[in-house]
Amino acid sequence: MNVVQKAEGSCELSVEGELTIYRATEFHQLLEEKQNNYQEIYLDMENVTEIDTACFQVLLHHKLKSFEQNKMLNLKKCSEPVLDLFQLFGVSGIFIKQ
Picture 1: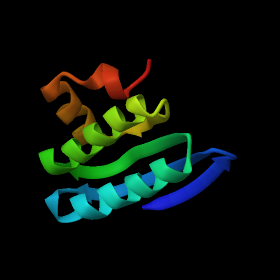
Picture 2 (picture 1 turned 30 degrees about the horizontal axis):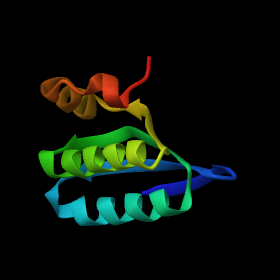
Picture 3 (picture 1 turned 90 degrees about the horizontal axis):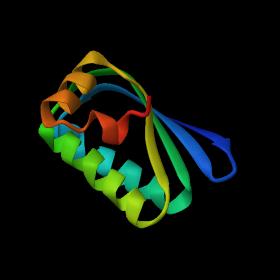
């Protein structure tokens, strides 16, 4: 996962490959660290090849945490597997701003 600081208080994370239970802890720790240090986080998930419910739960947890802390966690681009999972759970509107 690549991290690019965009401006003071914001960063963009480029997430690639599989987001499965095997990477859930790593994904959680990365988002936890970034939420502690940045007001705005943008996730580019265009190159995610697979996502399972473990990483979906991590993503949902951090999205809710961002609401509680008056911070932002937004997705910029999503791959087909990510979009499919969001549609399955009916949460596309929470993560994807049109």
